[in-house]
Image 1: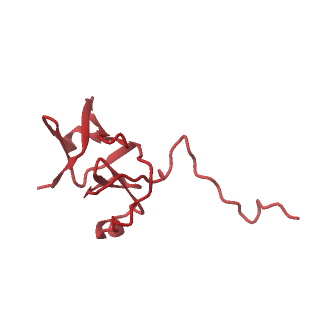
Image 2: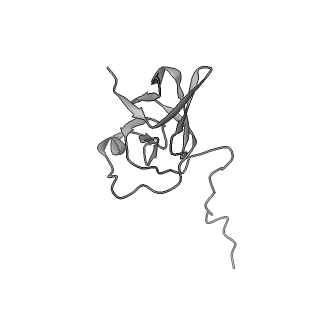
Image 3: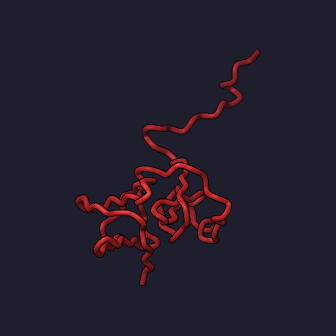
Length: 127
């Protein structure tokens, strides 16, 4: 049986997905409706489900939030974001559990922000 954790925010169903908005106004995510439970104003999300972050919160991870073992052993989890007090892997979108605070991460690749190419030895102008 999967664990469920409380999401601090609101949920809006949209077709097969649910949009979750952090109550602090710092972050929005989309998740499959089957991975969300809503009872009155209580919103819960299944640990291990995959989400798509639509809006990242600003800020860096505070030193008071140590790196946990699940972050170091999961593939494509080089960094995390904390949104609605839910910790999510930046690369894979896997929900890891609870966190305190709000911090973002740089999306790995988005159509609006392609990766910046680093100069190669052949592309550097010679003097």
